[in-house]
Image (cartoon, rainbow, N blue to C red; front, side, top):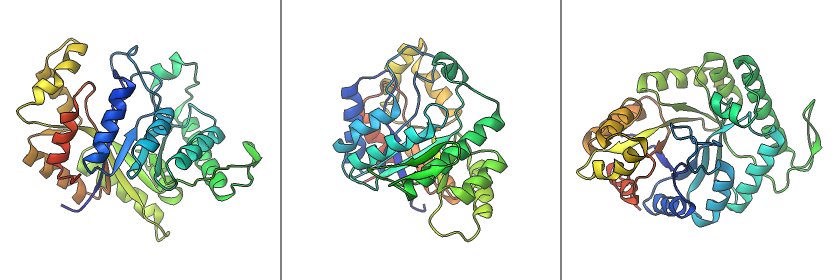
Length: 304
């Protein structure tokens, strides 16, 4: 299997800060490439009122605790913060982390109930895509001109110190935005897709990129759960919270993620590598113990 960088999302939903911290430290200790967060203000699942840790503040708190791995957000909703604020927040996180470890995934925003709950406008798709492109423009300008950047109609001579210019990976699935990502971003993130779809998206972005210099990432974001003897026990707290059975949760996860015994899991991961994935970010189910991270590390042959 061609080497891929594998990161894991911390348990932001339904948990506590000590649990998030312990998970991040275990992810780093077991040799994974990165510790990742989502960008949600409420749980994106069925239990909207459960504890939810906002992504950027969580990442800032974790940065000094896991000093060697990459830190990433998949994906930052361009609609939740003014673009200059998003740049300043991520620049500070990069500084806390020591510089050069942060990856910023960017998307248009897609959770309609969440936008409604927090009073955030949710315009039609064309306007959201336009705003995403403008957000990329602001990130690039403030990264390139930390002493004062100007983007017409958005910022004027705005400083960005401490400065950072993190890689930008766009959550893109339609051709026009994939082409834009190829020209203007550093990678794409494809969530909940099969290898064929991932390869098709990568092809569109790479064709648009042409011979531009620099690496271009193709990142899969998906659920992951190795099926071993203990799996149902690990899933039981999440199943109880949802009012269902561990087997029902496992069946649902399998509809969108990689849920399989270790050998089959590795085979399926190899299919994504063959399709061109350079990176994977795995999301484990909520309320699972640290042993689930260990099982994922053993299955994907991480060497912490």
